Image 1 (cartoon, rainbow, N blue to C red):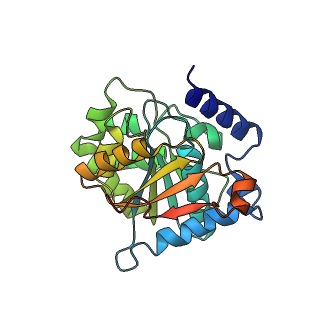
Image 2 (cartoon, rainbow, N blue to C red):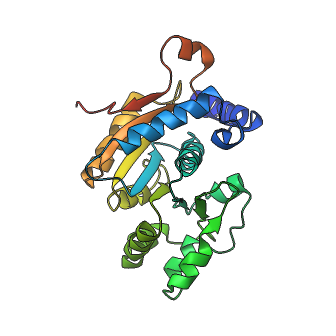
Length: 247
């Protein structure tokens, strides 16, 4: 196992043991929870004249914390009274249902492969313990995620959920692994890249940005997660912003 894979695995395990999966909900007074609220504010004002309705979180590689960031960001929006849907668009490695303790028997894949039925869509969006927050699980893993995500039916589902909710947050697969994230980002209002402190490599992030820009994704910023306390005190902190605007 390479040095980077070992380090990523260790940080993922530490993250799981410390129970940070939904810290914005179970410990709203924590510093990290406040940082998620800051992220929420930045997103709200990213396009003040044209509010964001569909927002994608992705990363360059697997196991970099994008699902944790997606879930906590969704929780903070819901806590503000914003009716929010967290949609698990990572059909290859779905995790959102586990974070919220929900069933994954019926989800996005079923809606994309079955008969088009708005009643089924409403049923698929499961309530969570957090008021105003709903989750649409990925459902059973399909053999053709890219084809499903690029279908007209996916466009129709995005349109329907955008009408039913104030905000739809999509947890997308990593950009460098498959084309799924590019497809999703090209069809939504905004995209944020998650980059873990001490792991993210500039060349990988630049390539991720380039791939997203090729499909005209609207990249509104980068979130640096897993920042250790010592680095926070050194003002590395929780970064959000147009980190890669210059080429």
